[in-house]
Structures are given as structure tokens and as C-alpha cells.
Image (cartoon, rainbow, N blue to C red; front, side, top):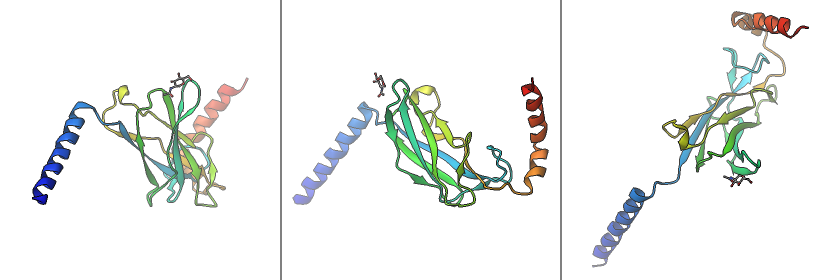
Length: 173
Ligand SMILES: *[C@@H]1O[C@H](CO)[C@@H](O)[C@H](O)[C@H]1NC(C)=O
């Protein structure tokens, strides 16, 4: 008898929750994913010599675009062996600017947050036409204290020095 009423109760609960799910869409949930690298060439972008950093700490913060108030702050998240992280976010942040930010590096030789590569903007709203709940953030990087000797060759292959020269000419009066 007790068993029967328990089953009835469970079925009722299942009915209510599925009816509820059908009527009101659940809260929006996002998964923000990205990677943290060591910028071994001190150039603030990824090269083939960049190394994933395991154990780096990042967090995600959203701020109201109008008044700058914090609308969401994630716990600090640590990168995996491959340097990747995943942050779960609940809610829709259409009116906020959301950024993943570097917090801490476990590597003493690679712990300067880069200027251009320390923050990654992510769009966390279902209203932007992007389907799916996984949002990929641009990679982030800490700068190595001293560039690796192989950097010159790799950067030359990438056309970095030519680019720098071009910009230099343009910037010259
Ligand atoms: C953002 O700030 C504006 C101005 O203070 C306010 O009207 C609005 O409700 C805020 N939005 C959120 C999502 O907090």
C-alpha cells in the first residue's frame, strides 16, 4: 500500500515537472570554453611555440553595459592538463559585457599577464542568433619572462618582422 502511494507520488512529481518544462523554458545556461597559453615569444599572440598552461586560474565577469555594475561573477576556474577551461554560466546577459580574465599563473617563468591577451570577450545571450550553449572564448596568454631562442625563426616565418617594419614606416612622420 505504502509502495503504491509512493509510486503515485513519484509519477505525479514527474508529471508536474515535465508539464512545467513544457510551459516555461528553463533558465538559459552557457558553457564558456577556452585555453590559456604561455606566450613564449612575448608577442601577445599565439605562435607554434606557445605552450598550454595547466593549472592557470581564470574567471568570468559580466558588467552592465550602462552602469558598469557586476551582473555575474564566476568562481575561479583552473585549467586542465591541456590548458583548457570550462565555465558554467546561468542566465542571459544580453545587456552586459562579459569577459574571461586571467587571474593567476602557476609558472614563475611565465606569469606576466599580457596586455592584449589577458581578457577575452564572450557574448552570453540566446538573442544573438548563435545556436548552442557552448561559447568559445579567444585564447588567453601569460608572457614568458624571456623569449625562447627559436622565436626569431618562427616569427620570421610568420612575417612578423615585415609587419612590424610596415607599421613602423606608417607610424613614422
Ligand atoms: C543596467 O543598468 C541600468 C542603469 O542603471 C538599469 O536600468 C538596468 O536595469 C541594468 N540592467 C541589468 C541587467 O542589471
